[in-house]
Image (cartoon, rainbow, N blue to C red):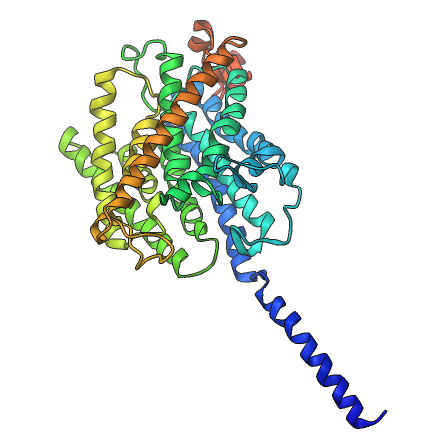
Length: 445
């Protein structure tokens, strides 16, 4: 073939290929670094639920430790299946009127190796869905601390399934879903201040009120049976929280680094703040207080992690502990409700403070895709944050009450007095965390 003709054909083919090359460059591509970071963050968030089991388990009486830990651990199984079947598509499916996600991803249909450009264009869709699953798992687990030592396990499973589907999934869509009405309003919630902590905190308070106080509350000593368990749980929660907050950047980038830094900083400041307040109030700092303080700091920084500076994180950590301490030490006794493990005092109060503080300290210098807060010339953000807090409190609180009352028409919510006396480990599971083998075998000690 003539060389001139061959050259002409190659030139034409090259010109025709340019649009395809441009199109290919415009498509979302998988970034292996971001994907690896996402998978590791997912694993970190996963470990938080077993850590919560130890954190809660150490704070109850020894006859209820296995039931308390089971209430957290079983969420890994129950919500994993619920999320694949229907939860994910309700939360992150294509928007339907700003209220709920469509059913396009029912049963994880279409959730695989290809990226989802709406949420995370550089990681596989499946990686994003699994990361969000871990948030869906731990949120109902947080609620369980409020009604520890008195709820029937069968009723608990029904309640959790309904709550995850009717409360968590729609709320996640409102706040994080593309087209969700709270997101469109401009509210900022980087990693779950409203979706996770406020929703679970108010749900725990409502559940505690509906079920009533534990038998012997304020009469029988109900002190934590294993403080080392509490510390173990708090330490692993702190470790996993780096995936919870830094992982919410959905990429291995500078924003993730900022979230990592402020997460540790706020937790550290809140730990110190709590033991100082406790020291002044009771004369001695406690390990239980230190563990609680760091968790409260982690709760507060969660909505703000991608929007505030380390200095702001210190201020938030220092302020949140006295607020939660006051709620637990003053408000709880004053109103007389039995929130067994202070879910509302820690997650409810801490989450409310964190969401509002985001409206004060947020800065576009940290995250250009966020917004400036009150201290940076935008008081309107604080108002939007307040609306998101109020909506979350009302929505989760009312739905929790309705769900519990509906279940009570068919199933008893609370164990019998004899079962409560015996302990839920034996009455609900037929197990004993600390069996007296010597007594059972008639061995004299």
